[in-house]
Amino acid sequence: MSYVINKIDREILAVLKVIFQFKRGHFLASAHHLRLWVIRSAFFISILSLGTRIVAEILGQDITVAYSAITNLPIAFFITLLFIHINNEVEDTNAIIFALTWGTLMLGLYA
Image (cartoon, rainbow, N blue to C red):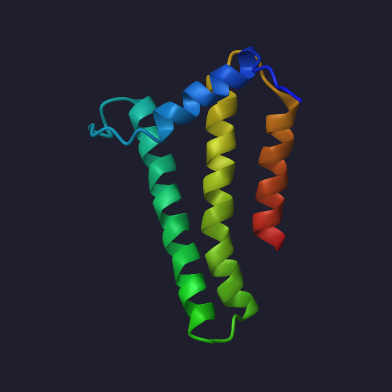
């Protein structure tokens, strides 16, 4: 089964490429740079929180509900920011991206 990449998929891949290139730049240069900086910061914080949870599980510590919420919230925040940014950058709005944004926000808040 082959999959043909359509226009929206190419736009989304281009936006992801810009986000994860991690070029050095001053984050106050423009609103776009500030948005990229916030998304990248949320990405690093979510990786850090995921790493602390993995280390806690390896060390055999109990994972309480509060600790789980603290580690899951940055991940949901990053994914929500990412989907909102993608939706702002593409030409045609996509109902799937709106649903993914809402779904990850609700999952992060209530899981």
